[in-house]
Length: 156
Image (cartoon, rainbow, N blue to C red; front, side, top):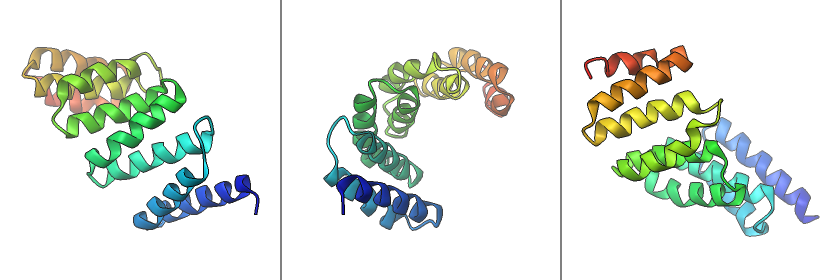
């Protein structure tokens, strides 16, 4: 079977496993994609990103972080990966590093509100509640779904 077809099949299988909550099987499929691909191949970037996302969803940020960093490097700076890296760093209690990375996602319209909300969490973790409140209000102004975050930081 040609390699490209095998990679596409593995990606499809991994997605089916993910939707069916068979996460260990999904991880195995994505790892097989990594074994078959090389840097510069979008499937490799996607496999790293999805592995990072799966590990984040399972509250394993330490396992997620290397995959997300690799996906971001392969993409040459995809803002969504910056957002995910920031979330992983926050979960690892590395708020200063998270804040630095999250700024890369703020400039991306689809990710700006969530990046601002995550920056609010980072600021709060660092003890800067005034900045946390300001960032949370900016997130809510961009997307109403972040209104509860703004309310949570309203005392700032």
